[in-house]
Image (cartoon, rainbow, N blue to C red; front, side, top):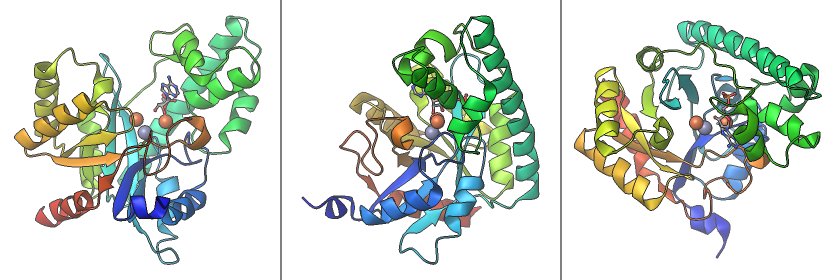
Length: 290
Ligand code: AMP
Ligand code: FE
Ligand code: FE
Ligand code: ZN
């Protein structure tokens, strides 16, 4: 079947570009999304709106709906918490100012990781990491890519498992916004805050996840990412159930990173994601209601 036909009317609301740790530029992403027949997309880079703002500048010349987006790393010691923000004003000055603080902390952390790797005897320099990053926000995946190029590890995954994961030998923590601060920042910029890939919170069961969701909703959370390439059918069913029970919006995206995350394709993830456009309609309606 024609790939454009398969995706017709579908969306992808979780995409990384070269503005963070994705391997394709915003323009390359928008062109690819249009080619495969997606109806709406959002570029959601880690801690920056640069990729999203660039993509929005192509809205007029490309027949595809582009929503603004971001993915913020929040402070959550038990696991990894990422908060997606949709339909934010990308030029909001408070948002930009807060992101600069976060980006500064990220840059300092990256230098410390490289120093820690050097202490461990690994031959790596920070300028090599910058080169791989292509000028956007630098993240651990870029450090991992340098380690692969140099043959220190066989794969990005191995770099995370052996060195870069939380608690790993070269892990360094950094300042992050508290979950409520990330949510409020998105709301103040006119956007819709959504909990990304809930399984990374490492909740021990559904009851614990539900209580985290209730707290986040109290802080202003509006939705849950139900569809994601890394979700099993059990994840999807659980998140759908919890979102409906608590009156939260459902969203979805592939978490596409290009060649930086092999096996995940734009629009379809690991092959079978088909995310319907009506979720975008619900997102937009939720803003009108405020
Ligand atoms: P950072 O934003 O620098 O803290 O790096 C975290 C990012 O690394 C995540 O958002 C993912 O994009 C990526 N990541 C985390 N674990 C892995 C892994 N095992 N393999 C590849 N990428 C990963
Ligand atoms: Fe990433
Ligand atoms: Fe994420
Ligand atoms: Zn992501």
